[in-house]
Image (cartoon, rainbow, N blue to C red; front, side, top):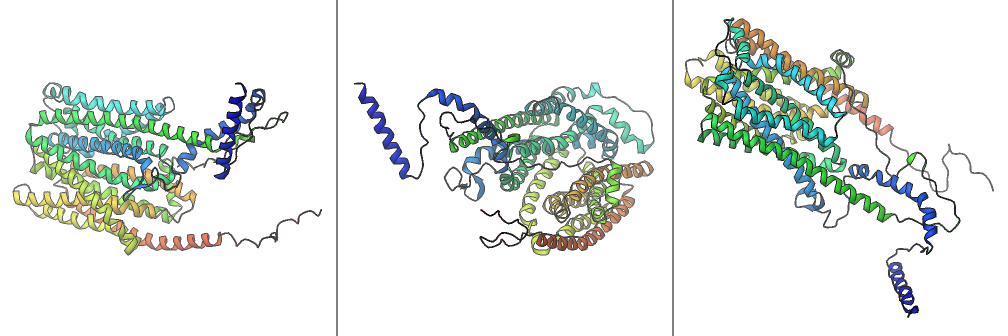
Length: 594
């Protein structure tokens, strides 16, 4: 009775050994003495743990895909997403959709509140004296919190204050607006009336500031920071273009929802309903963030288990010395150190751009786009207010406008990307100033030479042309301006790319927004309204467009020259053909004789 189980075990082991030998696998010898296993296990645990600690990095670097054609990793239809990746991808897509849904809702609401009460001219004062200082304070606080809190706590603590404020405004501040707002304002010159009204309707001003902050925090910071932390390099090449397509659905759904609700209810009731939707979308963003973290942790654990299963622990014979861990914690997948983008001050940015004509021209493109948008957007909103003075009508129009942006951007992203491939970089870069300029000149003509203050038909045409220009300017930016701008960095060396992008981000963003707002402030203070200063703004706008076109043509020449230099450097740096087998390289020392 005591012999049979032992014989069965030996027979079973023999059958397993034969089966595994037939499949090409080998079985490590079994050590039956537990004291030997315990003796040598500490020497083997260190390299295994070192390997497992790098599984997260390896998962992100390799994109989480094994490259096999199994059903778990096969792509779903025409979508370049593997079946096993689909839960993570859809969660990220939902996170981006809800974030852009909130952004679109609050953007339309903030414009409706401020433009219909304080006037479109007040936006020029808001951006310079309120939004920019608030943004600086917010990001200083965010940087401090990021060094204290975990990623999950930082994300939630950043998102919850926005949800709380929008809920407070929709259900408390706006219903009490007649009580909390000042009933009268002091007598001031006409040009300063718009700035004073910002203090009179202080809750609307606060809503505008918070919504502008969310525009800088939602997608650029919260979403993309999470995506860049989790999505691997190989996955990013397949997923990120799809994120843009899913994101374009946000303005479409948000615009139609806003227009429908404002069509059926008066503005106060509609605002409360939209507030509920915004708060619900905010909690959905937090929920999808948590789901992404859980899916990522699950993927990391599966990767660790796969790494442990693929590399069984060999056992040394009795008396063998312990195997030391690799020096310095060497791992199979060495981490790739990425250079961080430097943070430059305004003066440092000017110094970087002054040393490079190439980077200076790229900055001119970014600056020209910012100024062109500033010179047209405020005046367009002033015309919209004249045509839709009621808040509900204004909000319905903004909903349709947001839908048009989503549809146009989606179509132009699909079609516009082929223009640089077919017609070259210059054609793609010139498309943006030509589209914006041609429609804006027609818009300025209606305002300058037409009687928009008395002719309803002329005002309607100005609204149509201005809206078309604004919609196309957004679509052409995402489809052509951003890609061609990024293409201009390709032939530069690594140092120029990093410092150049940092300098252009500082000057292009600051001067484009604050510079255009300051110029329009001065014009409003001298003329009394933005429409009265239309001829001056049109002249400045024309100068910006001509400088933009000149910069594109000049940069195109340098871009081609840089590309030729870049190709020559790559050809010269190409490795030489390997020497025939058995013949050592000329620089290699001769092997010692036996």
